[in-house]
Image (cartoon, rainbow, N blue to C red; front, side):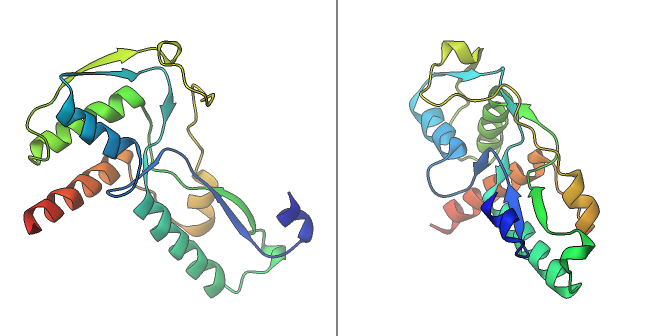
Length: 169
């Protein structure tokens, strides 16, 4: 709100369900737990768009490039809030299943554990999470002429990155 009130030129990007090949995130947790356990109980009634950090970084760089290249002024209406996530959506259960099956295909894990869908109410957390957190990226795509990739494409890229790093060791 303060940024908007300042009337300074700005791009404010919102995202959700961020993961990467490194750091602490859902993908890395699923890979670790997939190696350690025979069964995983995963929430199936919360929906979002898993988004790789690399997509956010690359999209941000492209937005800034286009924004500056056009010599955008405040009157042209490009300042403001944009959503950046992968296309499509899935549940945490769907995402975990895709992670573990993709990891198995790339020999990142020895076997896929049994994956059991559960309700969010059966997995209490301190943070309240919305049941549906899919963001509409159509404004960003229209304004900047971008087509964001599907969440499955981003996941394949991150798993391929992990598999390549493993082969290099």
